Amino acid sequence: MGWLNSVGCPWGYVDCLDKWQALIAGILGFAAAIIVVWMTLRAERRKERREFQALKIAIGSEIRQFALMAIGAHERCIAAIDHQIGMSLHDLEDACRFPIPVIYESSASSVGKFGNCVHALVLFFGNISVLRRTVDRIKANVHASGSIGQDNTKLVAGVLLTISEIGEFLVSRIDNPKYFEEADNRYRERLREARNTWNLRFPRPGNA
Image 1 (cartoon, rainbow, N blue to C red):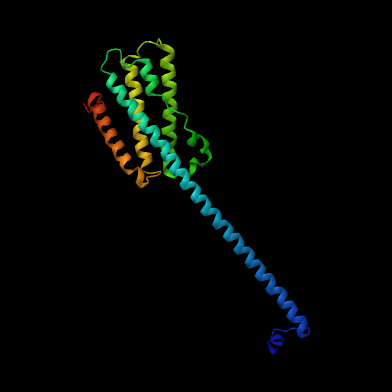
Image 2: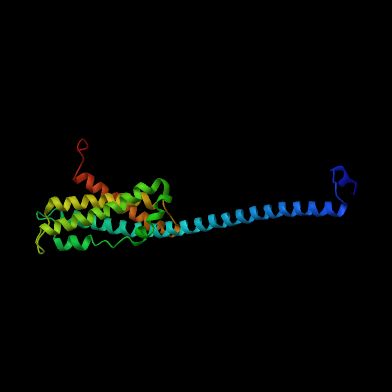
C-alpha cells in the first residue's frame, strides 16, 4: 500500500480505495458511453448505406423503364415523320403514355445523395414532365382523329431522344447490376442507331 502514500493520500487506506474506485468507475462509465454512441452511429451509417443502395437499384430500374419507353416512342416518331401529316394524335398519346415516376417523386428528399448525378437525374424526369406538357398542348390544338404534323412529330422525337440519352448516362452511373448488363447493352445499341439516324436526317448547323 505504499503507493497510496506516494500519491499523497491523506485518508485511511479504505477511504482512499473508495475514492479511486469511484474515479475509475466514472472513467469506465464515460468510456462505455462513448463506445455505445460510436457503435450506434456506425450502425446508423451502415443502415443508411443499405437504404441508399436499395434506392439506387429501385430508381435505376425506374430510369430504365422510362428510357426504354422513350427510345421506343422516338423510333415510332421517326417512322411517322416521313408522312406529310406526321404522327396521328392517337399514336402520339399511345407512344408517350409515361406513368408517374413514383420512386423518384417519393425519394425527393434523398436526391442530393446522388452527388454528380443529381443534375442529370432532375433533368431526366424534368424532360419527361416537359414531354407530358408538350403532348397536352398538341392535343389541345389537334382534332382527336387528326395528325400532329411533321414539325410537332420532330419536336416530340427530339425531346424523346434527349430523355433516352440522359437515361443512358444515368443507368451507367447510378446503378449497374450485372443482371441488367445484357439489357443495357441492347438499349445502348438502339440508342446509338437512333442517334445516328437523327444526326443524318437532321444534321446540326456546321455538321451538314
